[in-house]
Length: 361
View 1 (cartoon, rainbow, N blue to C red):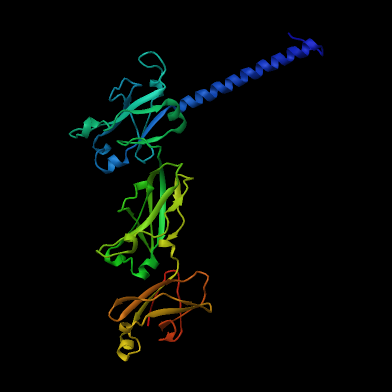
View 2 (cartoon, one colour):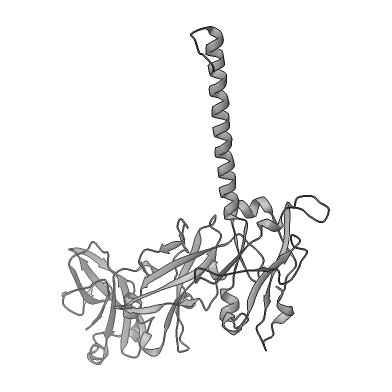
């Protein structure tokens, strides 16, 4: 039995024993942490949603997914992949295959591909193999970043996100550029779909609001860039071919599920469209467009006068314009003027809400 006294030797011996005990406990902690990390395994994951949607991968018909590479001698149907979360992302733990290469050295760079084993009476292109060269990735990168690959596509550091886009279209309806009644669509397009001109259609939620949750892949180090576009059902010309005329919208990706703030097409939040008939004025000779007369709208916005540009000549007896009304304005009055200073109508008060207003004389 050790008998500790207050001597210098005893104090030194006590310190040595405490140090050794601390070292043993620390080693146990490290060992436990290492074992815990190994229990998580080294996962290869691949997104099969596109293959499923295109009909190339049908688990319901007996199709199965595998991965093969330099870590298992490229044996086709040895390592099965499974999907557990209902998101069409399949994974396989390949850690036990990574001990040594054929030369007896540890594997540090993986080479691999995913392949589909078709069900009975089914066939798949390229005997189920991805139609691209062998994928390559360092083991350390796979362990630290846990990327999700996309079947048949080269890895680009993109990650999956659920993004909800919402846009108000009431003002575009007021302006006559967007007519859902004739089958017009509003779509969203951006960096996540290579700025496709067709975009992804949004769903009508009522009251001029369109929205949709879209599963996208995006490099999290880059902002998500997008804009909305109107696609008319009829062959009609639209400003900027239907695209918003504002700079591209951008947002950072700080969560895997993102609900973007409500937006208004072209950021026009309050608009008044004026449709002015001139048959009576032209018949009486009050308004003579052939002699250079022009029409304008004079606005009184909370008492402050504002004069519009010249109205557009739409047809023989109809002129139009659209004016944005500031959100801070409470009282709106208007009248039609000829040649900047001749009043053709009296000042009238009008209510212009966030859904816009169509104003006629």
